[in-house]
Image 1 (cartoon, helix red, strand yellow):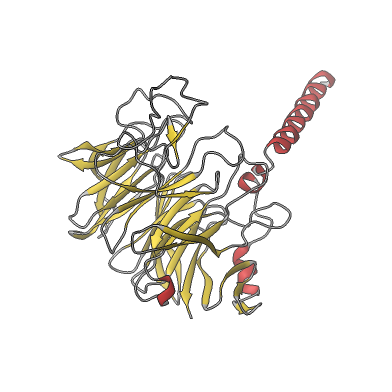
Image 2: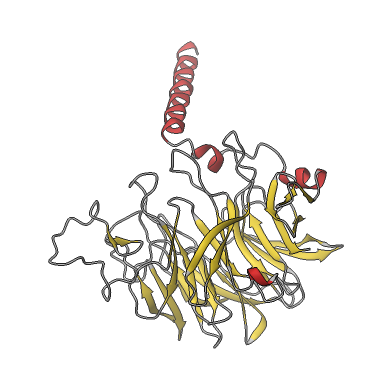
Length: 397
């Protein structure tokens, strides 16, 4: 008995020491993996939206520009990821880690759980068919299925997807013509893939996948720009090049283009740390590779993206909002916020500003981690949070 106790004590001590060593190497693991230090929903409710200083709006621990209001409209949705509104005003939310899909119904200005379904394998992408808005599509790791939202779900197979590895989330979106697009991330951090279906965007056609664009390591979220119909994507760069390399990216995805991964990143930068081949000319230059549209702080982990509607204040209309989920592999944590990217008429960035911040505390903990951004029929912004398990609503005053 004493021997077993000693072995157990040694194992605990070794685990603790390893934990301390890892935390020293990657202190950003604390906000990424540690529990929230407080219930953000209660903190916002206890300190409702106010203005201080004049240039800011304060909602509990969170801060926004003056002229906006933020509230928590749904709680008890652990691991909330992708959101989609149905024609009846219900909000559907995928919960990847638990393998669940939840339907939230509006009730007295908030949303409550109306139904919850389980048994999915890494469910992520959600989209309603524009030609039949009562038909919900769900992307799991290895397949896309669909069901009518009238009555209990009866899932119909749409297409098979390749299994994941490092990246298991699959995101989907319909274009103006009703074509369905799906993103399949890489199986690794950086490697030469064997499966020709991964690290790409595909169009679903005739029960199969047709390649649309390639060279995308982990474009977790996609969205069509309302004004142009162009497909935009957030892209996470590889690890192990330091705190500030490579940049995370925003890309405009065009048919037939190669966006560089695994040998290029950002604005046509060659990844010589991985690709040791010798070239006569830079292999990352156009027309061989397409540069990023916008470079972001490395390890910010950009996820959901959405464009401001016409009803928003004039200075925001058409601008891009992006959720930074937050770093885990950087000495100083970064991200944990929603940013606004000011776009000019050509879709080029004129600057990146914090829009909602405050999830990352001064002592290096995280009250939450923003994931997806959607605009409802009320043209309010909705933000999912997979750490706090809540949904936020942001409106212009």
